[in-house]
Amino acid sequence: MLKISKKTDYALMALQHIASVQFGDVTPGRVVNTKEIAEEYNIPLELLAKVLQSLSKNGLIESHNGPKGGYLLARSARQITIAHIIESIEGPLAITDCSHEKEGEFCMQREHCNIRTPLLKIQDSIYQLLNNMTLADMLGGTPLITIQSASTQGVE
Amino acid sequence: MLKISKKTDYALMALQHIASVQFGDVTPGRVVNTKEIAEEYNIPLELLAKVLQSLSKNGLIESHNGPKGGYLLARSARQITIAHIIESIEGPLAITDCSHEKEGEFCMQREHCNIRTPLLKIQDSIYQLLNNMTLADMLGGTPLITIQSASTQGVE
DNA sequence: ATGATCTCCGATCAATATGGTCGCACTAAA
DNA sequence: TTTAGTGCGACCATATTGATCGGAGATCAT
Image (cartoon, rainbow over all chains, first blue to last red; front, side, top):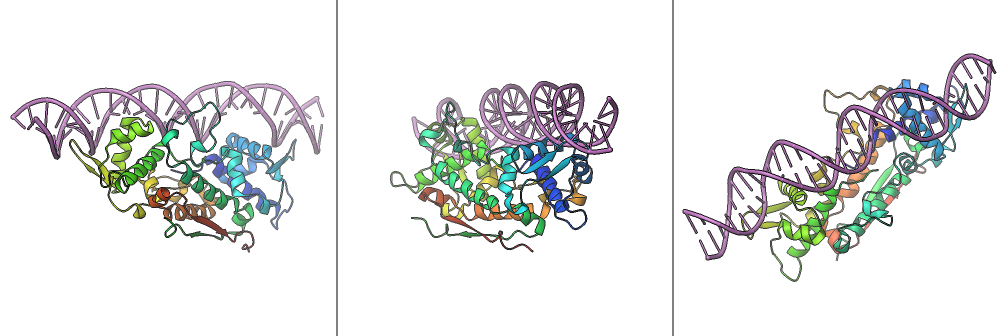
């Protein structure tokens, strides 16, 4: 149903939490560890750990080992896009399979496929949407995005 | 990965085919049956049958029984939105679980959840996107959709 | 009427993706 | 050197999806 996975949900919550701690008024700059987030939001600890590892590996957060270790944002919340977060967890976001098509796989429908081009357009639009929204927008509250469509008249 | 299912792919192909036959130059108004579509696009017959049944049940196409039977669009291609097609096959399109939340299910993260509102905004944007594109746009070729975002400055 | 051809519907199975768990190696602070 | 933390990979359970099968009911031609 065009759904994002729970892992991604967790990633978003965690990032939002880390960002708000890091730039908040109470303890700015504090490092936050996995356990703290897991308990705050009732997320299974080990699963969250894996999620954070993925984010770290993708350069969204940086990890500090040892006691008093934990995570903090690797860059400004304004530079972390929702698209990047989702792709860090779920891999390249493709609305349909035929968008990457590595060699070796064949699409049985390909020869007469009539929907590839339109689907790629949709995919691109969704990507733009997610790429124009950042973690900072999620902190602030209301993301301001509008859609403008000309598709109702522009067909020949 | 925010992917639509193969059934939905099949539904889109089938609808595109039905529409192009129905409004094409060769045999306008012709009824087209499941087998024809399945063979043309290499889709498993029985699976496609189920997909078409769903579309029929949702009022997108109408079925005619018996020999020489088949399907045809129940309304103009311009009135069939991509969103409607997807929802016919996959159910209500929800980017995240917490958007419907029937009673009885509880979201463990709910009490401190910080991402619900932004996610619902995103979901709504995607819905608008898919709701503004119709089957007619897929026939014509290039859907004309643009995204306009103000999220980079509009945060308080 | 009767058979052939179609849609319709439900049950079922296999493959894949996802959510969640476990154990251990490594690192850094006390 | 002990302890609290991350890093990492293997692992299993379950849900979703893709695909299959069998039959019931409708309609048209003969």
